Length: 387
Ligand SMILES: NC(=O)c1ccc[n+]([C@@H]2O[C@H](COP(=O)([O-])OP(=O)(O)OC[C@H]3O[C@@H](n4cnc5c(N)ncnc54)[C@H](O)[C@@H]3O)[C@@H](O)[C@H]2O)c1
Ligand SMILES: [Zn+2]
Image 1 (cartoon, rainbow, N blue to C red):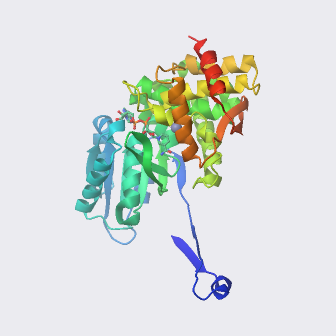
Image 2: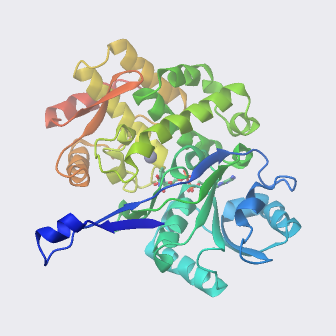
Image 3: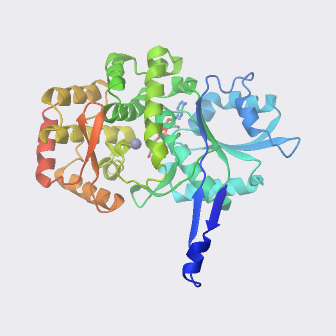
């Protein structure tokens, strides 16, 4: 997995110094597969077959709600293929992203007696279980193979397809986390039929983000399909939904792949993620991730407009798209002082620079490093015009 070479010439420069250079190979597949757990679909079986033994075994961590809706069907799949499995339902709520849960999951892995490489972990659920199980898989024996099967829209177009893992710590989102690629991410849109409308809309927020900063055509598609962004719409996977879905994944991966370890802290996919991480957990009724991102995006649209980067017409069109998706554009916790605090925390996260992605047209973004208190005041005023 790792390759390292100690350069002779470096060593010769100084006999008491060794410079170690290593690179980490990343090779994983993100694949859309409908009817993943239908028994005539051997994809998962092929991935889980133990090449070194005549029996195969997996440890499955499954979101509680996914267990309720699909547990029997999924278990039946593994029985049909004669793969023995250990089945652990876990909570998919945001509060589950904590260190106690990590230790519980690690204990379950330990209890299962999993072989280090040839037996795999499978995680099935939303972004929460992707993050917390991925984090544990990375810590356990310094990394064991795992397969992601995201079951929410957020999971399928965002949380499940990159390499980030994490848990919340001391009231901060994802403050403890790692980069740890799965062996594969298998996406079955059929899971979306039982996701609540609120959680579908939550995922739509991240799709809108990709449209605003990278993909104007996706923006048009969203405008056209606005009334059909539903569990039924996404799970039936008709042509418009398929195009929206594939463009969202493709544009996200185009951004992630060349910068998987975030060496470059100027990331356009951080659009809508400047103020939202500090505020997501702070409200009395906490906002979902995508809802906090939507409020942040509206503010950033206002910032673009007030800086003359986009026209009034485009600013209104973008804000209306967010509103028409039933996402919030204001929050009582987005006060000036909270925004300043959030920007200050983001400054640390982005190593001393604001690096705030702002749209400079629909489908395009630039970075800004000089936002002032006055910018925030006028952006808040602008967003408040919309009801
Ligand atoms: N690692 C990353 O790159 C990344 C990216 C974006 C978001 N995230 C994280 O993802 C989390 C949000 O993920 P989410 O939006 O998927 O929420 P979630 O994981 O909390 O799932 C939402 C709800 O839907 C339920 N659920 C899951 N699948 C279901 C299904 N098929 N049918 C019915 N109910 C189902 C869950 O039990 C939960 O109650 C946040 O913690 C966020 O920080 C991580
Ligand atoms: Zn996000």
